[in-house]
Length: 88
Image 1 (spheres, rainbow, N blue to C red):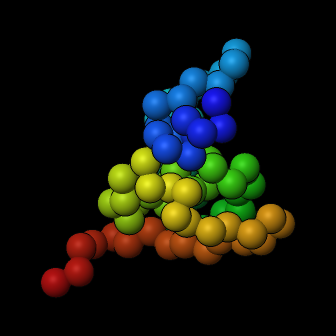
Image 2 (image 1 turned 60 degrees about the vertical axis):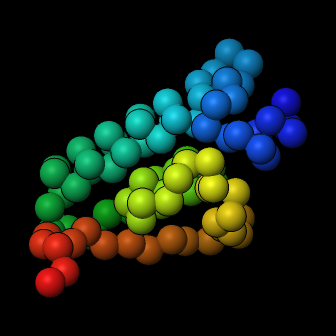
């Protein structure tokens, strides 16, 4: 299974669990709800590395299959912001 996770992470279903694509969809929905509920506020959210990587992939337009290229160190923070308009 580990080889599959490293080669095609989005398509692997963990035993009694979800695929990374399903995780990404669930976490993005939560992030968007937090954004709507706490517009203009600072919010802290905590999760596992692959869930965080999947959200980063979504918002920067990186294919989910490449999430292993993103390096997140344990117990570190990732800071992001929400743009209200597209850059010119």
